[in-house]
Length: 458
Ligand code: UD1
Ligand code: CA
Image 1 (cartoon, rainbow, N blue to C red):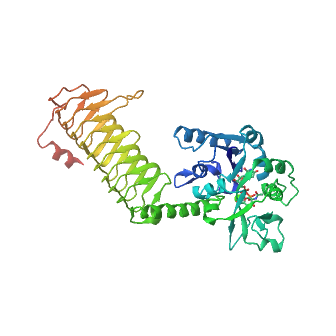
Image 2: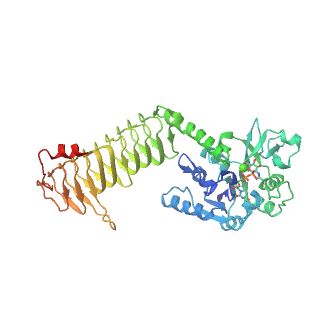
Image 3: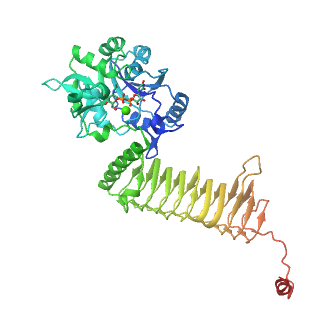
């Protein structure tokens, strides 16, 4: 017995007008396809993606997700070739499904990202079924006809439907749980003599329903909306935003302006987190209790501790921030930044692969790259770690309780001991031992009256 998800994603997505495959377009920072994969229940043993247009791009993304541990189960891909319809798409997976000894299929669309894990859980464990929606305006969806007992009787695509059929409000959501043993012969028997000249999966599902009952489960339409255009994408994102923000509010998170605050599906927020307007959190973001994120701040893949104060307009990615740190405004923490407890990073400070130990401060206009800063060390305004010689990156190591004056450059590789004082305006190229004072300055020249004379000439 094996349950295999078949995710259809071979379509061109013409209406997106994009060079990016439709299923890779993001909703709150995560591509549509990743939302679908993440919603798969634990009982799914394997997922087969049916691809064609943009296949290499999608496969490259899947590799990344696999490396990041974001895939809930093994995933393989098949190439549909020129897409000839949803039935043709599932048929393209036939050999793969046989190889996997699939027993039950969960058929989903890669461009329907908001389907909920709980819905799929029910679909995967219940009888053969399809998900339907009851829509006041059923639009161009396929129409669903049921027997008196509620099981599937027939489906008619909008383009093939007559006037009476078009008045039916129950429509096909395009998600199914079906026995492979029944579906396989039905797919083989499909013809494409219909209004669109396509091999309709729906025809095969109706054929299955003639052999074994297929339940019609009416589902919240918000879960089954597809992303076919940029307008759909914006609407889906608005639905997802509301759903996620409201769930975090229930958990004790304050949103000063929920409508402008974008929290991705993988964020984990503690109680008493406060998000100011226009905050965006993407990927694996963790925020500890009592942390405040200032207006316009963007955080991607970062772990932030408790009671951290992030002032407005910071960008933080692939970084770790300890408890009670203070950051910004206008700070940029790039990949590999580690700020320990109570570190202060001020305005216009950029860090990359930098570790700042407990209580270290860099409050103004600085670049800290490939740098370690010891406990309680104070970095003055305008500090630059010169980490790149044009070919290689080198490390700067600064000890604890060091005072670095303003406008200092350190040419890496360089090591500064503990308890060192570096005078303002110095460019250091050599190591400084523990307890020393280091300075490097050109002597100052002052010429009486010359300034006034020069300015007078202009
Ligand atoms: C399909 C259903 C329709 C249902 C609707 C729900 C059929 C015949 N019709 O409509 O009843 O109301 O979904 O959204 O199934 N795809 C492929 N290969 C193909 C064709 C499509 O991989 O050859 C993929 C698309 O990329 C997409 C999904 O299948 O992810 C659905 O295709 P789409 O064309 O949007 O479905 P419709 O035919 O409009
Ligand atoms: Ca569609």
